Image: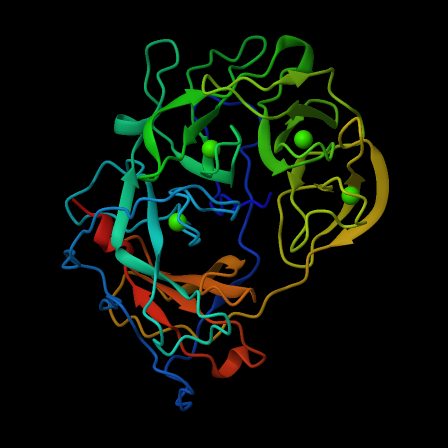
Amino acid sequence: MTAIRGWVVRVRAGAGTAAGALCAAVVLLTALTGCGTTPDRPATKNGDTAPLAGRATTPSLPVPRGRGSRLPSDFNGDGHRDLVLNDLVKSPTDSHGDDSGIGIVYGTQTGADTGSNSATGAASALDPAVRQLLTPREHGAEVQGVLPAAFDAEASCDLDKDGYTDLIVATDPPYDGIGRPPVPLQLLFGSPTGITGRAVVLRIPEQARYGNDWPDHPVCGDFDGDGSTDLAVTASADRVSFLRGPFSRKGAPRTAAAPVPGGGPALAAPAGAADTDADGADDLVVLPRTRTPGAGGKLLLGGPTGPARPGGRYTFDAVTAPPAPGLPEGETKPVTDVLVHADFDGDERPDMVTRTHRGERADVIALYAATKNPAGARPLITFSTSIFLP
Ligand SMILES: [Ca+2]
Ligand SMILES: [Ca+2]
Ligand SMILES: [Ca+2]
Ligand SMILES: [Ca+2]
């Protein structure tokens, strides 16, 4: 019932409307590196790789077979949260500026005692060796005979209710600017071996659309509290298309009525618990623009008919990023984005994943365990998205 975000700003070819952007919770210029604190646990474990751009040296392992789970962002259903990476470093030989695709790093089970701070023993860790690259060419759905060029992960949840998390991707289908644009959102389905097959276009029934804006800002949640995950998507004139799950493998919701008022230009899931008033139905945050730290929005509360009741102000807390790992080479000053704030190591406390990059060719992803002292945190694991380069 939770969602990962497409943290990147998209520009959609041919689109006259503002491209959607769900920005990182915080963006910092990292002036300092190497904070000199003493780690209170082993700083690295399975498969740590040098946090530099360059050719991948990390071996590739098959995705462990899962049996289904209710965990968010668990594409192979093995009970370990997986990481979605929208921004990948580009190859030095890539001069076209093509979308490098979406990278998925799978979580795996760690040994009995790996130095993780897990209290339960069911420790997880991200393993860069277990990874998958999703490209529009291999995984996109054709629209009017054209494969997408853009491919950005927007949200993840189990839409078809099979126990494997599915991925909602924003694309750039052909549009001549006249009339109602095509639906740019595509669905990729999880399976025991992770994301599999080619995407299908999300079907928004005619009666559930409104106006000529691009349907955008998909948010997962059980907004009617019936136990199946639904999708909310923006429509024109501050309306919200409420698509009831479960969804078919052809991308169609179970039902969808006319869009409801009370929305806005952007939608997001609340941080943390999606059911903010604990009435059994997940709630939506309506934003005047795309999500930024400290951004003020308003709640649209779920209920038996879906998101419909105004619920007052809502503010996303700013998140403090730990000191970034060193990244000596690169085109620009290092910039750090917080990608996800969620439990990756299995102790049910929210960890943090950051990406620090210098231009388009050097980056480092770092996973930090939950801590009360972010300023002194050292990453559990670091790797570069160069592991996804061919
Ligand atoms: Ca998993
Ligand atoms: Ca699924
Ligand atoms: Ca539902
Ligand atoms: Ca609620």
